[in-house]
Length: 325
Image (tube, rainbow, N blue to C red):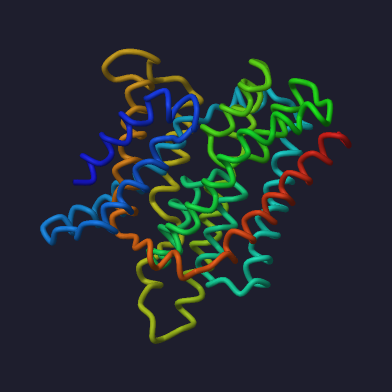
């Protein structure tokens, strides 16, 4: 069932309406389709074991596969100042996002997921963090919805701001890559400015993805310690100190950097990345099918306000560092 929804979402994402005009990626579409199904029709009992499989092992393999996007040579090509800008702004946004979530009284797990998604790479980061945080279903869905909404609006907003601020093509690429949430949104906004901006923004975005492994590792340790301190909880035994999918993330990144797999052919990097996209969509379908829109409506506007404020801090920090460095 999750695979069928993933196939529909991938086909819709390729249509001009969603790809060129709305800039809705397959991940956003598949979770929306799953949520609408849950709202209109009951999820059949026979599908529940498969949906749970999609949400956990399949989605974790997809997160590990994100390492295939990274190569050390591409990361080093953007230069030391850009690496400093994206790293500092990411960490500042992460800390500020978590602080804002506490100040606004959000549920602890929702705040953790919102902070990670806004600072690193949107839905993919939220999914990766949720494998160790193990938040309520409505928390992960709300975090994904807020981050996707903001990032989509940024596709239209950032090019206009770039022209107003008089940024060069390179500087705009760094700013977009350091500030927008999803990779597809970064590519779309960069392309609206110039071809050079798109290329720079894509590489900068990959640098942000590099922070996914250490931050999820940190969250895993914190969750394990928290649950060990509570004798009434058994989650600590379910959260390993080093999640296996993060180990595979690093392994896949090393394989990509060493270029030991051909770029084309039946067993190639291209086919591997396509497989990862499919796995991610199937996993996100599982998330959507277990999310109740009525639960999201009860959360109110506070998650959106936290997401907007964190995004403003991220954009302002990265832009300030661009002017300084």
